[in-house]
Length: 293
Ligand code: GLY
Image (tube, rainbow, N blue to C red; front, side, top):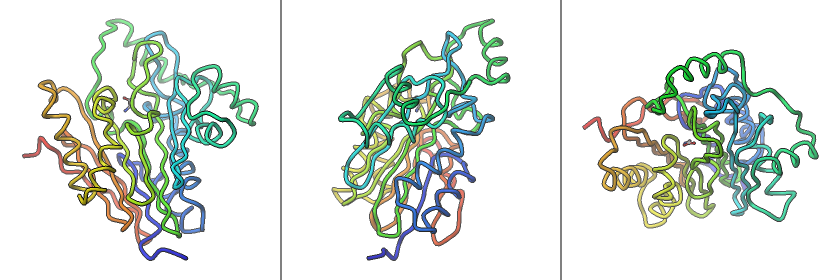
């Protein structure tokens, strides 16, 4: 039976084209997980985006390593971490979910699985991200930038025509991170969580802080207790703020969607926006920030 509130797609930041692609895919009847993967692939393939996929900023040694996860309406999930040479890592996370007995594969193992499943090796370090890296090497100062270029990780939640919810989250992680560093984005419960009876949530921003509070899982559990998506996002951000005297020095932002098709978003610093595709209209919604007030 079709669901009257669906389809709905939301994603972190002003990734208009990505969210439009997911919304249109849902309108054409695509299932929620495939629509989310299709949507985030727009940014994975966008070489101008230095925080996701091909063109992402490298680690301190000059290697681009990508992280991603997916979660579907059955509660199944897959993730890949520290993957080199593969652009569409959210699609690869789905392969882990469907074709292996595991939830997460790292590094070379994930890359080999990709080749066995028809993914092509690609050079992820673009001329421009290499030039920026060489400039960074002059000081090698590690200082994550809040709202980097007004985007960061893309986390996406989709509700399909049957009301089923799924999501995808994909990133190149923090620019000039330590070799081997993995953030929240591929961690189920931190960067993404979906419970088809309740809703879903996704995160962007400083992964270390999101992981410490298992932010996306927390939001879904708060919605289970009766909070709206907006209230749940606000409480999850406040949880981080209340535990961290340093909170003004980093950004964390959440988006959430419940089974009624209601959405919410909240962040620490002003400057974050959520895209929302609903009733055939793709809208940029500027998020209220804790530091607005
Ligand atoms: N939220 C992306 C990261 O910290 O890697």
